[in-house]
Length: 254
Image (cartoon, rainbow, N blue to C red):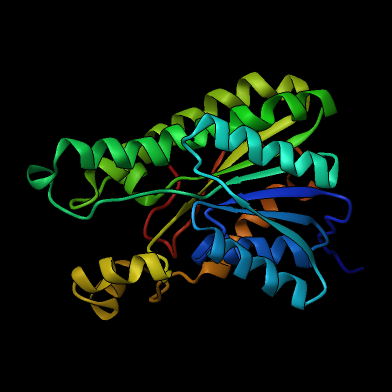
């Protein structure tokens, strides 16, 4: 007997959907049957994601959303309800990071990283919370980072923000579970996205980094999207408040 993940009838909002993990996740959820709202501060990039989904027969719409702006977040959710009538899935993928030693970071750098990465996750989750409570169902998947689990030099403010997202994931899962809402997180290792390639090169290139990964390769966006799909699906219906490390073994669970 075959096993498949079918999200037909589900509606998903993916933030940071204009490229990288967000774009790959949007496409994968659409292939599984979900209607996808590709939300991004870069609206042209979000529209490109939608075009790619529609070209393969999927259903999607683009939304211009600054995740840390309450009005933007609420408007994006309202547009989703107007078009599709519900919200079943939220993937909080949007983030910001400044690659530098902490001694070289300006105040505005780490405030920006925390504002987009942590506050943006909380703002977007709050924007869908009432809808999911009224439905008595929903799945929220946050993206953490190995930087938030074990710490990384050159990514101190980003790691601090992601550690905050990890704490938020667990606390929100405990609050929201009574309403049928699950909240989990993916913790990616270094993944070859357009946004990460500059950092990878700054750290000495892919070949140097591979030594730290037992599986001897860096992640691809589809690796993270596969994990997100699992946490969005009924296959994980009794899983909440958990952190799934998709890192090629760079970090391992206790």
